[in-house]
Length: 361
Image 1 (cartoon, rainbow, N blue to C red):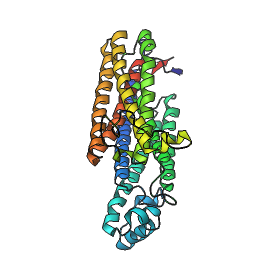
Image 2 (image 1 turned 30 degrees about the horizontal axis):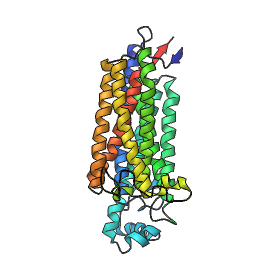
Image 3 (image 1 turned 90 degrees about the vertical axis):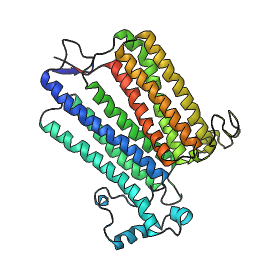
């Protein structure tokens, strides 16, 4: 038997047993995606509370156990007192204040460990019971590998703030956030294509796949740019909208030399490009819905298109509110969560065009 990822047809539809197995796997992957979304939100809170450097060592196994005595708490606090962030930002903080930032980082790491267990154990169980189709096995292993890489990248990010900086590298933070979203999109794509539903026609695919792919690429770009904004604390500056520093296009966008550094290290430029990409995303989302109506108009295509547009506009509202209100924690976390939700909507749109995975005997 050979397997194809072509859309399901009446003659190539999976049988009842495979459909049942796919349902279990699909809902398991939905659960993992929900956990990844939670991880992104908790990671955002960890960043906004400046908690990410409170644990100065990487202990993937032993680190799951928090300090259990006064002596252990004092030992952790003493380690934190050796890094530049304590000396420059938090010098003189109390042990209770340290515990507050410690628990955010510990919770973030614990959730990462839990996601790993929640992925690995069911994977082994489904595999042992023969519930995973042969073509799906390497795809799920790739998901497991991506999760391991994300853990390593997380420590690589934290390490950047332990010696010569008072916070982590914005480059590494943006990469860490983007990889989390890549994992979400990858697993959500598989889950949505395991769902039994009608596939798009060739005409719909030809007319809509390009704009759907362009929108997805823009979402990933915007998430990376949002990571740069977070890494540079750029959201705490230029807190007006629609003007920025009193201008539509502010002066000083290219004051750094060489010029390319402005796009990654100039607070003004980093926030400006995040704004401009948001406007572009709105335009492409509206165009996508118009094109969907023009090319198809069917519920199969229009429903995910409407979801996508609605989520984009909500994300813009959260983004503007976060900016003008000087980054309140609750709004900032909604903004971060909706970035992942918009990403999910973009993936779902393309999955609807592609249709479910099918079998060919």
